[in-house]
Image (cartoon, rainbow, N blue to C red; front, side, top):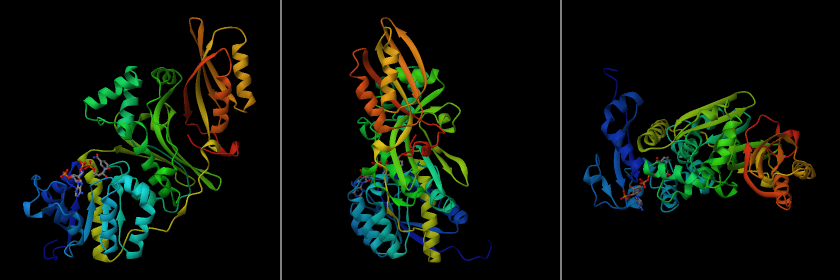
Length: 442
Ligand SMILES: NC(=O)c1ccc[n+]([C@@H]2O[C@H](COP(=O)([O-])OP(=O)(O)OC[C@H]3O[C@@H](n4cnc5c(N)ncnc54)[C@H](OP(=O)(O)O)[C@@H]3O)[C@@H](O)[C@H]2O)c1
């Protein structure tokens, strides 16, 4: 490299200096020279915006700290804006302002992208600048770029992601230790893996935002988080996690997007994953995205889905990409996307696990089986467990329409012998969705 010109500088504004922003500043400033040598671009920190500029931040020269994010974005000396504030506002306004003034934007903000991604991508395309968001799904795991670029020519069939580390940690603990949801959540909170208010994670909101982003990329259409039917893990009974394990399955919260004819089924729900499936080995707070395509077959991307440094690593990769593009006058490919043709939730099909508690007396099994038959839900297997004068009947079904399964449950609850329908969980199977002519889904 002796004698070669030093790489040109790109000036970066960082909005937000919390878990991710602070780690990013450390990577940018602490390792600047080595970073320039490795990447061929010299990144200069042009400013850091926070809510409370009175509080000093490690590695940030006081002169670069500001409480006025809007002015920092508008500063003509800034080439590239990194949004790490989170939430919808003021993040949306700031990102729009940056893009409209021709500055590339890097963000880790899944909530913003899942609500307004298509519109923001449109602004970026108009200006010919990048809007990059590798860190928004799966933290450090490269998943956005592989879907957008490496798999650009692939006809994706299905994407299934374990994209929320908190819920995966809770479900792993429930399976390993046989504890209930509340005890597992308390342990996750003690370890700092769950927020004091865990709603966004345990009710599946976070996973739904990521499902929308993944579905939009994999199927090249516009999906927003409000499109995604969502079921969290708060209603997953410990007894069903244990029973699933006896049957050779593990329960995971999945974000699923699947091609169904000309349409698309997207949802977030807990599901039974066979122990031999690669997603079953994703334990604790790890994340993974499993992709099935016509030509590529099956592939899985796996790693740390959150945490300041892992997430900052993905942000830094995007910054280097955007800086390269700025210096060479290009932008990452961002084809226009039409609204997704979503399959209604009741028409989506899946194999099911159903746990039915009944009075243990002659004729009950036949009566229950008849109800399944009424609604065209085909039983694949049944296990019975005695509980005094009651019995637990656990049914595994072939693929069935969600609407038909709901109708089956409603009619079962009208039988005098049926005490309770407990866990109703979808199952990951290889059964072809076309076999039913309706929907896919795990
Ligand atoms: N944490 C993770 O593991 C992770 C993983 C993947 C993606 N993400 C995403 O990364 C983003 C940042 O997450 P985080 O965990 O780093 O958040 P965080 O720790 O809550 O930090 C947020 C930062 O934004 C600043 N801020 C708030 N309002 C502001 C405003 N009006 N103007 C300027 N700055 C403002 C805060 O300033 P003060 O410091 O003064 O309060 C703080 O520095 C989010 O979109 C999140 O979803 C995070």
